[in-house]
Amino acid sequence: MARWVGALVSVGALVAAVACGSSEDPASTNLGARCSAAAQCGSGTCITSGDFPGGLCTKRCSAQADCPDGWACATDSSGICLQKCSGPSDCASYGAEWTCKEESLQGSSAGKAMLCSGR
Image (cartoon, rainbow, N blue to C red; front, side):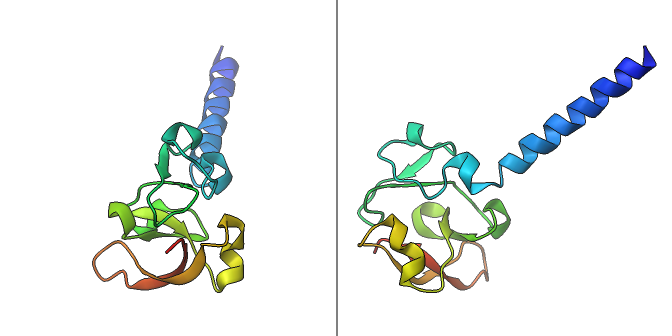
């Protein structure tokens, strides 16, 4: 009986680890995908304003730690994760209207970063 309990605890820990890891993976939430409705995004957040032509699957954030690696918490729309970039070519997959530009980051004294933006 104790062996079964130990095995179940190990399986439960593995499932929890996998689930926790997936929340940080941009692919698991469709971060960066085009959208027209929140239901199309694993994160449940689709920004469709004129600042994000073609729509953007993203996730809400209040601090940098809320966004996965390669993304930053921008002040846009009260805090959303946007992809970091070093030049316009990094944002080309979003469409011709998108570019790499300096944006303010969410949080007191968070500063600014270069992020993909449709403005």
